[in-house]
Image (cartoon, rainbow, N blue to C red; front, side, top):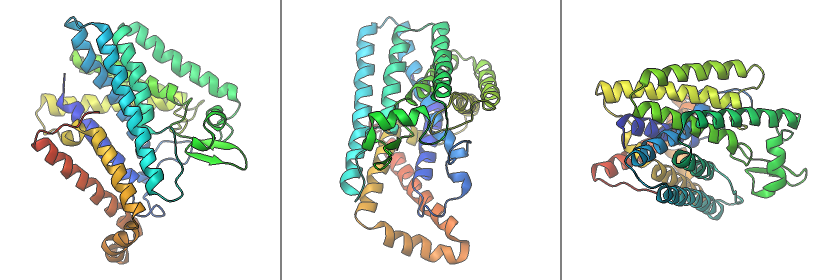
Length: 353
């Protein structure tokens, strides 16, 4: 079951991801295009959680109608696990590409697609075998409360000292996103323990998808507002933090995503507004993987310096300053992929993983 508004929101989310991830000059990035350094929540910090929320929505839209029509659970479960494995393997392959093309870049085991694949598998199996709303809400609450308890028991939320970083240091070591061999301290924003609250975000997406499928948009919007309120209140005790994906952060960003989905449904599916972003949305992972490879090729070949200097920084910086030049590169990069995905949609090409 495909819904235009979901494809549009997914596509806009991926476009925002490209815009944030591909600055021309990382020394000159507007604050509203940069992630919070640690505690806090800036606009880019909403991007990955909204994507994960939509993963849950899409799982519900894909699986629930088949089960309602009498499909057998076992084949659906196998399909979920097989697709999850492909997503994880693609994420690993992209990190191999980065290691090979970028000098000094070590291999990183976890990442955005790896976390997506793991959560897709767990939430997909839940959608197949644990269909009851009460059971899913219980799992959602247990994960968020349990994760909070684990972080508190860890004794600190500071970088390198929190439980999540200590687990990544011990189990991932140099395979983490950051690792200091001298101190033995590692950190990975998509590491092991933080996958738990990310799964809670996907489970929230399962419930949002159920409301959307049943046309209960008012309930979806009210739940989104309630989740943001609860997340905001919880942040007084447990700060919003994307890199730890704190329980308050999961509620805050997930609630915002639910409101965004409700608004998009009203504008696109009900009022007939254009599904802006749909082209990126139906080939979301292809756009993400393609942008990753393109970035590695540009950087690894040595083209990035001359390209940025002669086309963006040189002409624009004297007039508009270095921040706008950096943004212009990111916007151009994103636009090229948007046009490529629009061309693929026009030809009926859909690259699935």
